Length: 202
Image 1 (cartoon, rainbow, N blue to C red):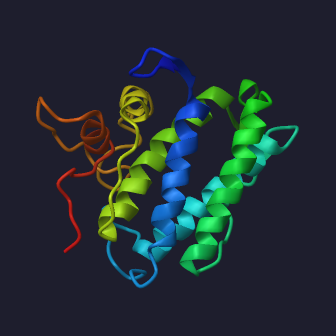
Image 2: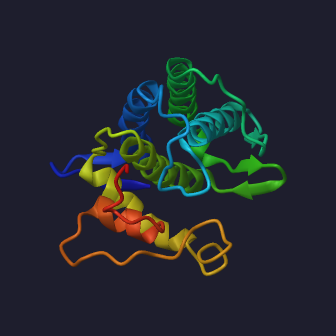
């Protein structure tokens, strides 16, 4: 995905993703003591979601770094200590960034035997990590402020993936949550992804 930032400069998905993942590592590092707290991702508490985001980021990064674009679709286990999990995220983010800047997003990414165009996979990763970063941040009382252009890009991309097969009761994504006309792109993205943007830690 290629777009333009608010100042008119050309940017790419990997440019948008890099600061999102850097901010995610900061959030993850500060989740100690909140492991059993609920999150907006209703089936996962903080510890489970922390493992999910770090493990899958490692899987995606390894897949892009692999010459054949092949990744294990099982996710990776990560340390249960928050700062160590954050280090896993930083290392995976660096590996992913290096692979994509070398052209890995120009070939398919395979999760098992299922190929996905590399550029589509990168857009999916950006979307997922903006939303899951918000999940972890609000669940632990932290701030989450991805760049507006990153949220806008994902709010445009997400509807292309959120077909009726994937969204609704018993499906990977909860039903869409309506947002107001003056909602930000981040709030629209959250609503599209089945999140209530007003959700806060109880």
